[in-house]
Length: 238
Image (cartoon, rainbow, N blue to C red):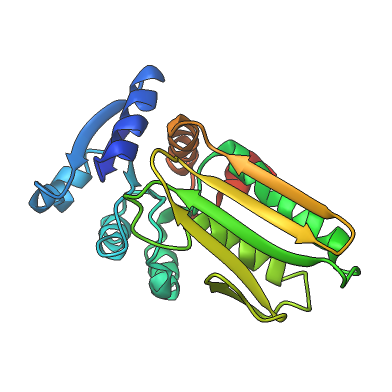
């Protein structure tokens, strides 16, 4: 499989390492220094693009991939206000998009665990739920995309919580997400249910970026054979 890497920072380099180990070829590497090389002719040398950039550039990068007919796997966060436009364009162009706030297989299993725990806790109003996420200081957005995904799962089930807030404290109807930026920290997410009697807590901690990179390459292999819009849930068959 021929891969275009759009975003060649720490994550892009980790993806490259895993992809090469699996026998794939990197035919294009785009970073802030050569963004002008993201052209239709260059991109079409690839079977699939893997896009890990930032909120400022992700939308345009994904849009180009879809318009030029190259399946794209995106892990960029902070751009989802444009999601409806991207979704419509992907359908219009009969293209392929996989989006996830986190490509770690472990995190996607954690998503399923989070949903199940929320269902179990919904009847017990004496338990208050809150979240903490910890990342490295280079991470631009807060809360993390993964934390937002976890929060939205909880809000869909815990009816006493109406919205999430990213702060130090919250109202009773708000789901509190605390964000900490500490080096080195690839990523830790904790969901806590606390009552006056006891505490129930689930935590996922990433030790390296390899888990994210492996999942992104797995998603690219899936995307190269499909048409449509998918998440890691479909990739992993969960």
